[in-house]
Length: 78
View (cartoon, rainbow, N blue to C red):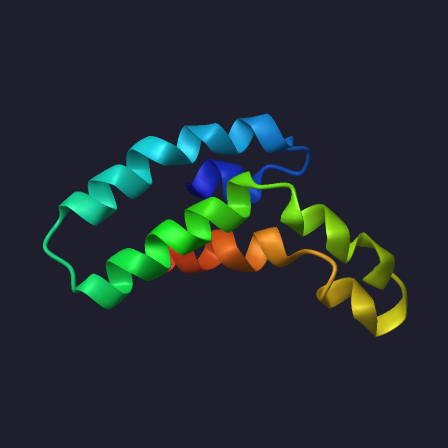
């Protein structure tokens, strides 16, 4: 996960590699809420939905234009 988070040119198909770490995270003894959050973040990261935030990429909106970075950071912290 850290390698994908640090990669500057990760394409959408690279995030399929997250399936195994998230499966191991879900299989561990965590609560049902954290399990649902991890699966929702995986679904968001691997979907094309983060591309719809690209129009926000100007000025201070640059921080909002990369939601995949935030989602991966949360997954890494979990």
